[in-house]
Image (tube, rainbow, N blue to C red; front, top):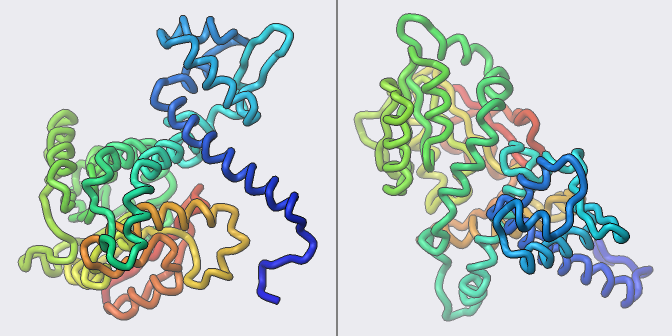
Length: 364
């Protein structure tokens, strides 16, 4: 009998399990509404239970919609309900799981991504057909860069300098060098949140952020001006084909959760290695998973990670005629690809992240 199968589950038990699964989908979409409307933020600030009318009035939202939304939250056991007083309350221990500014622990942020994925399920279904499209283009996800930028801000605001960089021996000292600092490149940077944070913290080092998305780079440029940063620049560049003159040019290059999305990830990694100075460092942060499906079966986040992959990561790559690695290409495959381009990666944990892994490389 195949692994994962059971002879003890009845049809009724399976139906109940599937009912819970489908219900969770509705709950997730309702959570995204709670994030977008600010309802979670409002509920987290209350000093006690309130009725739907009181919550609607305080948030300037329609009571009928608030009441229905609260019903989902109550039946999902997210919001507590007093049936006598007909009041709702969000217990404090649940705040950091729901609030968008709670950093890596915020599932409220992830529910926002689910909302975007829900909009393209029909397009992805068309790709399954033998004569259907290869994939879904980046343009089908108009809110993706904004969502990712906000999530990166929440994640990196404290964790990047305080927790992630210290895992790389000597990097903090190099970045803070009083005279020269070092030259850093964040490739496929999106809105450049990481680059902006690093440039603020380390004024003696210089930073370049690149991405293929012109809109994201324009946003990053405008934001760097608002922050009055003189040590950072942004450019529109394709990681698979970087400027020739950038060979052996950077002390540190980093890519975060992007290689598996790319059209040609192997070419991108070769270019990344080319840009690193001899003795310089390269960081690739990617999804924490395994190449073999069986090795991911006990991962409680497995369905979500494969779901993100199907509905975004894999299909945007295939749309361009790429490899379509998908988010769950696996640590084993990542190590192999890094070795093929000339790196000898060290596999490290990402502090406070259960879903990511850090491949640290030094260019010999």
